[in-house]
Image (cartoon, rainbow over all chains, first blue to last red):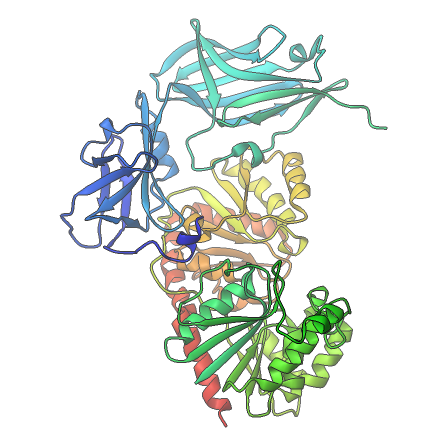
Length: 250
Length: 384
C-alpha cells in the first residue's frame, strides 16, 4: 500500500458503490446507494489513457482505475465472488476483465489476455502418482479420452498418464517414477498439460484473487529413492512439478 | 482538556499503536491531544494518525539524530548503559537504556496535561512513580493480568495504587486488577479497543471461505484449526481456509498442513494491510486461540458482517461473541467441537446471514466514538 493510501490522502469524494462487478457479458455493473447518473471513465494506470466504461471490450490490457466526475470511484464491494469468476470463465474468451477493490477502497478493473486452460481445483500427490482435477476455463467443453502430459523445460522427453474430459470437467493422473529416471541435473521442472487431439491446455489455478500462489500453497513431496517430486505453482499460477535430487545430509 | 498518551514507539506497526492512534484521533475532535513516543526510528509514523493529534518523541533513534546541547555526551554515555528504572521483565526492556530513563523521568516530572494515559506496564510504572500529582494518571493494560512475570508483577502491585485508574480490555482483567488493588483508591474500568468509523467493505456471505488472522505464534492455536479443518475438507471439500499473518511457527504450520493433506483447502496468505477487505471476501472468521487478550479481529469481522466461531478461551472472545447470535463459542481446546461448529455454520446459510446482521449490530458497540465517550466518562469520574 502506498503511503498516500495509508494516510488517507486519496480524496474520498463522491458516493461509495455498494456493488461493483463485471458481469458475464463484460459490462461493468455498479450499484449505488441512491441513483446516480454520472458517467464512469476508466483511466489506465500506466499510460493514463482514458476510456468510457460503456464498452469494456475495447479496453487494452492492463489495470484501469474507475473515475466519476474526475474523482476515483470508492466501493465497498470486493469486486467479485469466486462462483462468479467460475461462471465468467465458462464462456470462450480471449480477454478476461475483472473488477477489484484496492486496499484504499478504490474501484479498479484488470484486463488480461487469456487462452483456454484447465482450472485446477484439486491436486493429489500420494502413492507414486500425481492426480489433477479441474475444469476447462475460457474454452469450449470437450469430451473424450485425453492425456495428462508433463513436459520437462530442459532435458528428458515428455511423459504422460491417462486422463479424460467430460464436458468442462477434466481428470488426469501421472506416475512420478518416469519423471525421475536418468535424472542427471540436480533439478528438472516439468510443466503440466491436458492433451487431447494434439492440443495441449495448460493446468493452472487462476479463478481467485490469490496472488503469488507459489509462496502460499505447498503440495506434498513424494520420493523415488534419492529423488524428490513435488508439484508447485509457477509465477503465473500454472501447475508444475519440481523433480530434485536430494542432497545427502552429512 | 489536554490529554497526553505515552507510548513506546509510535512509528512502528502493531495493535497498541493502532488502538492508541484511533482513540487519540477520536478524542482530538473535542480535546487537545498529543502522543508522546518514547522512541522514534522513522521520519513518519507507519500508521495513519489524525492531523489534529500532535506527535512528539523523546529519544530519536534515527541516523544522524542530534541530542540538544549540552546533553550529547551524557546521552552517548547513558545510552550504552542498561535501564535502571524499567524492570528487566518488561517485554520491551531491551529498547530502554539509562538515557531513556533520564529523558522519561524529566518528561513525566514536567508534563502538566490534565490526563496522562500510559500504554504498557513499563510506562504505567514510570507514570505511577514520576508523574506530577496534579496530572490524572490512567494506565492502560493491553496485556492480560496473568501475562506479567512475577518480578514486574511485584512492581505493579507496589506502584499501581499510586495511579488514578487502570483501564483493562476485558471484565476478567478488571476483576483481577480490582482484587490486586484491594483497598487502594485506584479505579478500574473496562474499555475495549474501538474501531475507527467510516464505511468498510462488507461480506455478502457468498464465498465459501473461512478466514483466520493473527501472528503465526503458538498462542493462536492454528495447529488446532488445521486439524479441525481436516474434517471440514473431507465433508465440505469446496470450503477453503485462508490464514493471514506471519510468525515464527509459520514454517511448522505449513508442514503440518502438508502432512494433513490440506493443500487443496488451506492457503497461507501472508500478512495483509487490508484485513477488512479480506474479511469482506470471507463468510466465517475462525479464532482458535489458546488465549486472546481482547480479540480485535473479532470486532473487525463483525464490522464486515462476518460471524465468528471461536474457542471459548480466556478472555476476550466470550465477552465479545454472543454464541448463537453473532457467532459460535465452542469448548476451549476441543478440536472436534471446532470442526463440528464450522460445519454447522457452513451448512446453515440462513442462520449465518442472520448472524452476520447481528454481528454488524454488535460492532457498533465498539465504534471508536462510543469508546472515546466511555473514556471521557471515566475522566469525569476521576476529575479533580
